[in-house]
Image (spheres, rainbow, N blue to C red):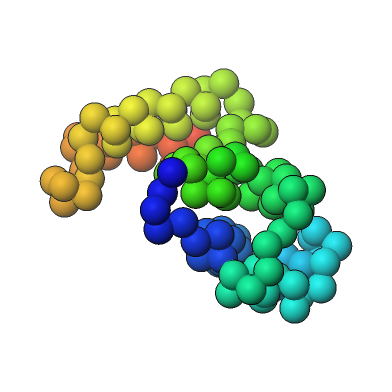
Length: 122
């Protein structure tokens, strides 16, 4: 388990990734915005059902929300097989050649990003 677990920080990060206000998030799970604020400040803990709702809404596991899993899931729902294949290849390339350490994309990563753009702009 992550020693620096901070549910509020995780929730706030996921909410901001979506570009949602606390009120928008609250509306999506039928809560008051003040409750979301309390969750994000770690002043109140959500119920199991609320964590499950967050998990479904953000497409992450409950383990991720609880700090037990350091990565989120990537949903390919709604993508065709070719799009899924390109995305999976890109993920594999990033795993094999970490851009953070090399500071530049490999030729294969650049090619896959180009394929993604071409495929999704059709």
